[in-house]
Length: 403
Image (cartoon, rainbow, N blue to C red; front, side, top):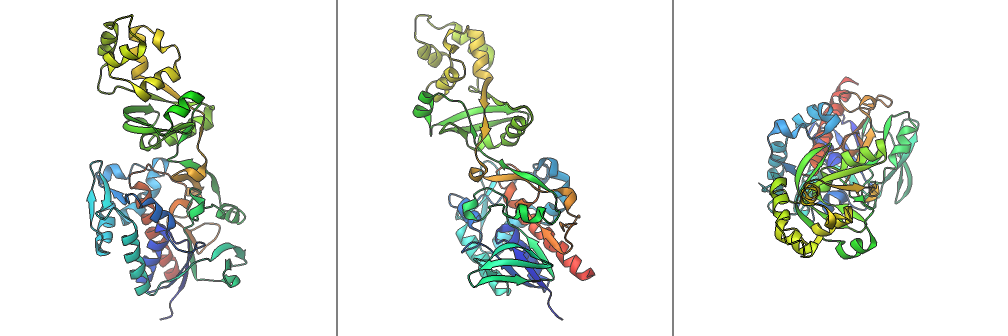
């Protein structure tokens, strides 16, 4: 039997998972990547602990992808969080569930898993060609810049898994957007996701508190209410609590030009009790002393109160208690997409068929962050990349069988 030639353009998790799946189906697979080594973003994300997936109930897991929930469900069913843990175990990587439900390798690194994976891919006969940058089309052929000069290939099927637009220094520079739009593919503009935001902090606040964590806080937006912590960054805010609300804040800024998080700085205290304790304080004492004794707030939390409302020290007890429980922290803009953990937007739902093949380009499929979906941090992003890579590979296999 003649092996069908398949090109995987992009050597991240989605592309490598597709390569593995297709190779096992008996196809000849070549992975092309623009960088000197593959899976660079995967490696960097796993330097301080690779959050590979999430262990929450699957019925909840599959509704973490917003408007793309229904679209992604068939792909996620092909590679569930439990399937990912089994896959990692087969590669010699034991995993454990953290207190938040996030799943990590026991080694807390991505490199051992990637090394074992690449060794297995090589044993399956998969070719990986680095420093091969896809530059467009020449009729039905794909064109590349390579160390040996320009090259063209005409595979039997192609999968693009080139990532979004975050962390471009690692290879995801979104150069593909213009190339695919030029072929009539509908693409929603890429936007930062799981990102920090700028705030109009005063120079004094910024200089004093940049890099300071704000712990034990509840944040509320149209995305709901979550508890955790965030960090005051240079000129703004970032961190896991902010990322949970990033899509809601970003979309509000796009729609209305303004957005704010409602912060509860004392999530363990009732507003009425705060007001009572504030009322009991010695009126002659300093604001900092009264606030500390009555509410336990000091440092960055106390400074945030004054930053948002410079007259906080003059507020009556009930109004100050209300401010502590519902502090409106306004954001002015998302941080640049190059700094974001991931990106939203991409190839739209109606631009691909149910098997992730581009309707405008039969025989060419798309997976991973190139597709128009987004998810919170916590293992959801990586799981969906693995899953769409496997689903697109299944689509390629079926298309080749019919053609």
